[in-house]
Image (cartoon, rainbow, N blue to C red; front, side):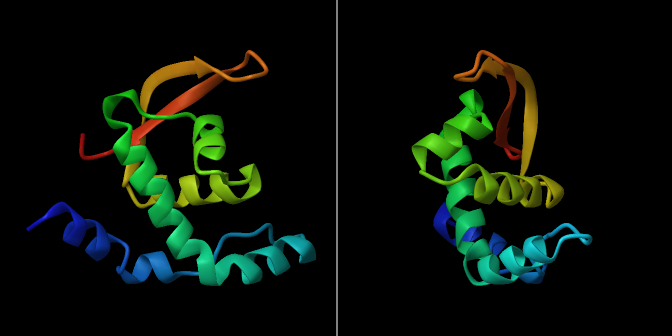
Length: 111
């Protein structure tokens, strides 16, 4: 089975079609989740392909946000979803952000 088919198959699973997460106490968070629902699957796939393309070097959230480009409030929930699905994981390393803080490095789980 070729890699492009495997990736397409991963992102057609029913668990990737679930409702985008939101803060239960926040009406605006629920609105944002409803609005992104249609594109969340595509954004997850885009983020996963980027993380996978980085190999063992991986990426931080900030690196993904800058490279894709994707806003932090869009990228982070997609990364959490990918992590919850077991498709990505922290590699145990950190790198400095633009603000000189440590950030976790994420890699594809199948590396």
